[in-house]
Length: 204
Image (spheres, rainbow, N blue to C red):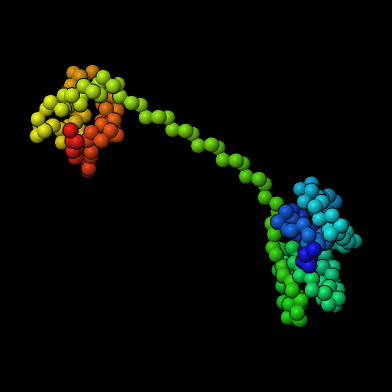
């Protein structure tokens, strides 16, 4: 069993999250008269501690009311001479002078500021699967390759723009611009041509 004890200033951190504390540690939750209800999340989180968790409901209210009871418990533990490691769960920095003193006389203790239990983040929406890029009509694609292959190399279009214009003329401008771009993209994919800074090089 762990020798670590957590002292919870519930009045200061009513939404404390105990889920990250090992289940073999001891926990004391200090509550005051103003705590009329306990969050279901906290009750659920405390069940795994069994009898290692205590609820200390104190007949006290007002600023720092529970702090004195926690300080008293720390003093009792220090006087007992045990090697218990104490962690105060509170956002109240007023504990710091006391904890510094207790550490100076050989007791191991600290304060950990904690926030309310965060609401679970909604699951991110799945990323849409991109639609496959359309492929050109095989007959049109093969016709372009055939015409270019029969052309003299020095007369072939050397820019992407002029290549697109040439392909359009092969079909009497009956192809749409997207259809022409599909043919050029397929030529690049099949490594029939390569492009560098807009300049076209042929591999056939």
